[in-house]
Image (tube, rainbow, N blue to C red; front, side, top):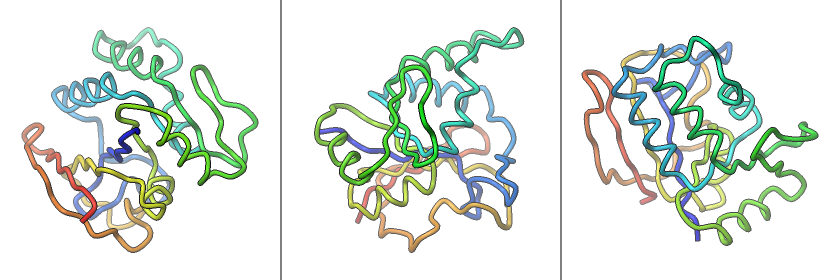
Length: 181
């Protein structure tokens, strides 16, 4: 059975992006970016909501301005099997499978049939997986900014959580790991 993990950057006040849908927290430090790359390299796959998947498709194509660390992340992201939850897309890109129809049944099937850690990416999808009782861990990368409003990490009632670890990633970003209480 797969382990479902939500891993996201979040502002100090609990938002993942601003009202315009922009991830305005600025680029991560090299140390933080390297941690993201190592994390993605260890995943067995990623389950995406449509909007976050479309944002991450940036990594599908090589760009001449990329350095070695950006190329490493892109290669890790491309190799991952991806499942994309959407009722509006007709198809998904390379190494991706579209999930539509009975979404809850398909997500339960994915968790039951796969092994390893699967990233659940996007706050709306994470909310659905949480309501289904399938989220195993929440990895929050708390970034040093206050957005004031925008898209909250938890748009529904936040689930009861228990802190299991915390560590400083770099001089201003904290990695908090929670499990359902």
